[in-house]
Length: 74
Image (tube, rainbow, N blue to C red; front, top):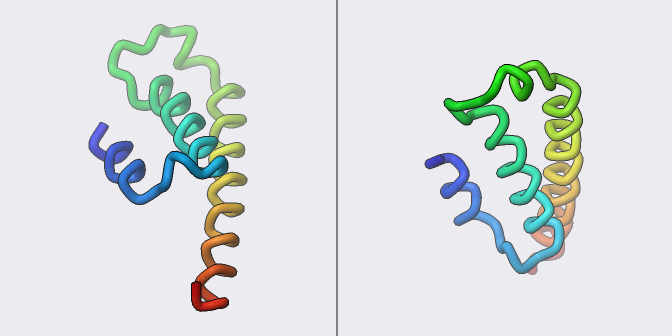
């Protein structure tokens, strides 16, 4: 889970949106990247799709906030 560790190091887990992102990321990765995934988990495409959508939404929100902060020179 090297990717997860790298992402976690770039975020501040005390910030609400970063914590939400990390929770969704790890929830998604347990289903998506796990080697011992059951057949039922692999077939749960709808759950994976919803998690990916939530991850994208929170990522957009974090990036927008960071962009606004950078534009202000903070």
